[in-house]
Length: 290
Image (cartoon, one colour):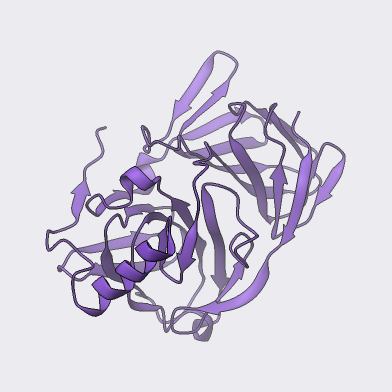
């Protein structure tokens, strides 16, 4: 059983054009978990907390994963691609060599809630072409693991005894697991995670216990690197489980650019300033096979 190595309390910050978010991973360059660079949780019923959205901005060198729990956002990029992200859906975007995009709310009131995860790319993949996977809610398997326990499987494979559920995202070099777990109060769950994978638990509703240690709501629990992931819901809870194979390469970040060296960052800035950040090709929209 994996024990907790570190707890990171999410800090309330502002990003984009003033969107209020809770940031755990990524508060500083020291608070990362290879290959995870940043984990933001946004959620508010007050339109002023999200209505300004995320106007056009560039990325290079990593992937962004947006999981919309509630609400409606419109994604647009510099080449005219558009995608609607609605309640329960996911967009897995590979920025690769470069993309300029925006994410803007398509509602003027009501609850908007979800996550954005930044997932690093290895050096050999940082300059590949940009691509999207748009995942509708009905494409995400929901595993009923036991009475009072369920899991949405976004990436990787969830194994329980002789059963397994495969998420729509597979085959990436970091072999990520991305599960949204729901547990009634008092319920316990054990999930196998490959030894060597870095892993964290993030309860975004309720409180959980891991190896006898309490994890409060909106705290990221960084776990040891071997053994199963086991948790008990102290109260009715929803929890993200994220795990992936570490890349083990230098990380140099400057805002929306994540590369391996300072020189590569300087090149990314020059490319953006001179209009050469992107390849000029349309970002590929990858269709999932049902």
